Length: 39
Image 1: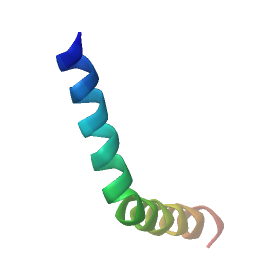
Image 2 (image 1 turned 60 degrees about the vertical axis):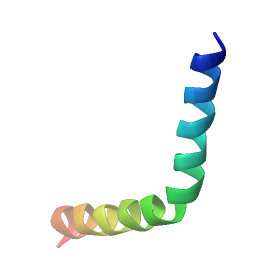
Image 3 (image 1 turned 45 degrees about the horizontal axis):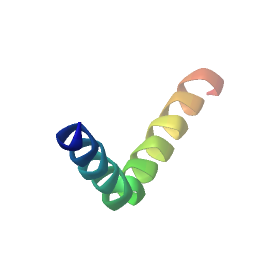
């Protein structure tokens, strides 16, 4: 049980530390899709 919680916490930490990078990638992909649909 404790190991599962630790795993979840470490994953959340990774998400938090990588969130800026992930948001940046999502924006790039969203713009790319937007351009493909509307241009």
